Structure formats: structure tokens, C-alpha cells
Amino acid sequence: MRLIFLGAPGAGKGTIASAIGKELGLPQVSTGDLFREAVKNGTELGLRVKSIMEKGELVSDELTVALARERLGRPDTAKGYILDGFPRTIPQAEALASFQRIDGAVNFLCSDEVVVRRLSGRRICRSCGAIYHVENMPPRREGVCDRCGGELYVRDDDRIDSIRNRLRVYREQTEPLIGYYRGRGLLHDIDSGQTVEKSLGELRKLLKKLRKAG
Ligand code: ADP
Image 1 (cartoon, protein in one colour):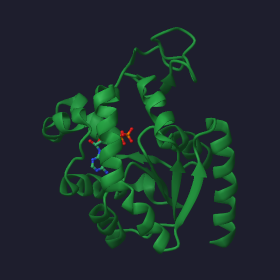
Image 2 (cartoon, rainbow, N blue to C red; image 1 turned 180 degrees about the vertical axis):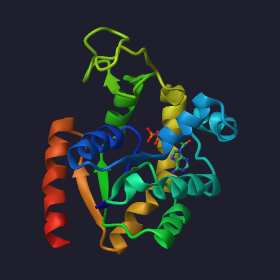
Image 3 (tube, rainbow, N blue to C red; image 1 turned 90 degrees about the vertical axis):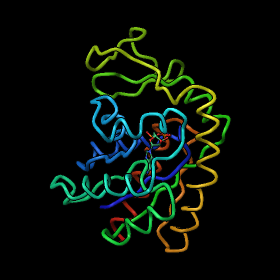
């Protein structure tokens, strides 16, 4: 099963992709995570994308497609994958279509108000990448990861200026993908303004339907 997760930043794509990926045994391929890893490791790619990411702008299609293509060529994606945060522009979607056949695109719908609240309260584990929220999903001990004891931090682009910019960039560059995939009969909407468990429930039903149809 090759799936694309679409939706505004903060709509819950990453949290849901991680959970459903584990259930189905599919890797979650997040270009954002791959870029963040490059920044953390100080690689050449990392140095090129660091300031772009901090501002909430998009990395160039060329770099992003090359990264995604390399990742999707690895053996763990042979049985399928969940693309989280890629494609994010029409040219990226076209590039993807030239080398992969996709089974479905899931659109996570969520209001701006909820998105801002979620992103500004988001905390991430520096060691294992687990995602928390100060109100909705607090760790047992403040600032410490329940899973691995790692330190929790606020992503540079989860500050209010960057959040607003990411939403604007999403509207302008990524939202057109909804029409792109709808036109190809691949789009499915999920309400992600509700709890993670409820969104996951909806998604499980949808995937069952897709598997039957496929
Ligand atoms: P978000 O929470 O905004 O969905 P991601 O972790 O997916 O965050 O991405 C963080 C940043 O990484 C983006 O703001 C952008 O700078 C860069 N990035 C990730 N995926 C892409 C992509 N497909 N195209 C361009 N830039 C990307």
C-alpha cells in the first residue's frame, strides 16, 4: 500500500502516520524528518536547508525530489510506505508520479485555529522523535520523553511567526495537491480536528475499504 498523507502543518499527519505505519508494518517516509536529520548531522544538505526550514519556507523541488527518490529506492519501502510531507507542490507530485504508482492520498482536514494551538504546544524528543503536546498529550515528566528519557524541545519552526508562514505556504503551494489527487480519483478526506484516536479509527476504516477495492 503506497499512501500519501496531505494536510496543513499541525493537522496530525506525522502523529497518525507513525501510529498507522507501526500497525501496518509500513515505513513512514517524512521529508521533514529527513531534512531535520541532515541539519542535526551538519551534512551538506543540512547546511543548505537549515535557514529555509527555520523560516517555514519550502526546500527546492529539486533537492526534495532527489531526497525522496533516494529514500523510496531503499528496500524497506518495497511493500509500501506512508509519505508524510511529500509531495508538497504540484511539480513534486508530478515527479513522484513519474517513478511511483500511488494507491491513495489521504487529506487530513483541520481548522487554522486548531493547527496554531497544536503547533505552539508541540514538543519533540531529541533522541527518538516522539511527539508530545503540553496540553493534549503531555509527557509524564515535563520536558522528558516517556519512551526513552530523551530531552523534549520546541522545533525552531513551531514559533508563532514560522507557524503563520507555514500556513500561508501550505495554502499557496500545497493545497492545490488536493485538486490534483481528487481529479485522479485518489483523494480521501479524514477529519483530523478530533482526537488522534478518532482520526485513526476513521483512517482504519478507509484503509480497509481501499484494500478491498484494490
Ligand atoms: P510540518 O509540521 O510543517 O508538516 P515537516 O516536518 O513536514 O513539517 O517539514 C518541515 C520543513 O521541512 C518544511 O517547513 C520545509 O521547510 C521542509 N520540507 C519538508 N518536506 C518538504 C517538501 N516536500 N518540500 C519542500 N520542503 C519540505
